[in-house]
Amino acid sequence: MFNKKESEVVELKLKKTDNFYKTVSAFANYGGGEIIFGVKDDGEVVGINGGVDKFELSIANSINDKVSPIPPFSIRSEIYENKTIVILNVFKGDKQPYYFGHHVYQRQGTTTVAVDTFEMNRLVLHSARFTYDEKPVAERDFKFNLLEKYLQKETGIEKLTNEGLRTLGLLVKNEYNVTAELLADISSRKFGIDIVKFGDNDDIFLDRKTLVGISILEQYEQAKEMFNKWYAPYEVVNANTREQRIHIPEIAFKEVLANAIAHRNWDINSNVRISMFSDRLEIVSPGGLPDGISAEEYKAGSVSDIRNNLLASVLHRIKIIETFATGIRRVKEQYREFLELPEFEVSENYIKVTLPVISYDDDIAADRLIINELSKRSLKRSDIAKILELHDAKVKRELANLVERGKVKRVGSGPSTYYELID
Image (cartoon, rainbow, N blue to C red):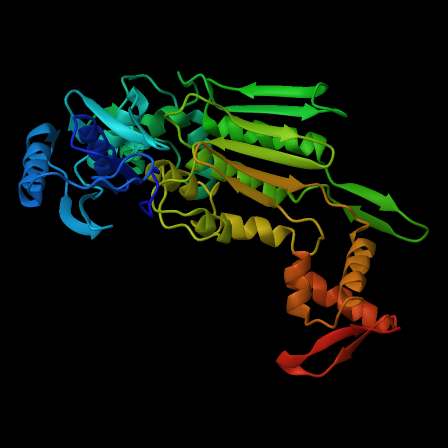
């Protein structure tokens, strides 16, 4: 049996049929892939009948005739189980969209399907080398009072004129674009942010706001108000002290909210969802990661590409986005001293960030977790932090406390230092 199975980037074909052109279109539009001729769907190798050179030439000529524009590809033959197979490698092109007939295709698992209108627009924009937020819109009568107030505060301008709009990139050749539409006081887009505060279970709504048809700046402000209503700082009064506490770091929330607005996929007709619970807050933004960013890079706070370049640039100028590529790291930093850690979930269709509500019993909980691990074996501080998924500064502080209390002893010095439990 053949050692490769069909997938998003591999298709097995017993022989040449018209269906393979669809897959050529899909691979040329999205990331590339290979089509292997002479192998059945179940992996049985049959081989190519007749002359291999003639078969390869037929494949090349038919792609040149049937797929437009002509995508980059290569063809080679290999001997497998004493039979000859032909491998067609199709590479992602830079002239999207690539058509077969009147349609453009993409892979969904092991099948090839025609793209919808939204995806077609995305491919056209990518090929034209500008992002969706730069696309012109038909509206001619936008007002930008809230944007003007932000600019007055952050840049010192007195009035936002058409020249200022051109400088920001919102007015190009006397046409507004999608970013202008998103920042305008009134927007024709009927999607934005949906916020729900839940009670004891998901069936109980204590509060709700659906923010649509208004500037994303107004959406941002109202979302912050909702956050402060339900997660406001509070005081704990002891015998001789007053301790100020927080539910969720506000800076972390603002970072995640700003990222959801700036980097979401705006050509998807869907709201950013903010779900507020007693023990956590979840923000889900439509659209997965843009091309050029892996899930690992995103979670590490390393950004190599931005989906909405123009929108991000304007939000950076008015200080809603502080700096590029540091948002995730800033969110993590806000939880540095706590046991709870934010969670980041990435899928093809959405990004979900969960900000946990802080428990102020976490010192006791962390002590118990550390003691439990040291009861099994001696460990370095870095190993404890990795095992328990705690920030190193948190583990350092708790270990110092345990050493002072005579629960744990420190052995050695420098990088070789380790800790062990005192019986």
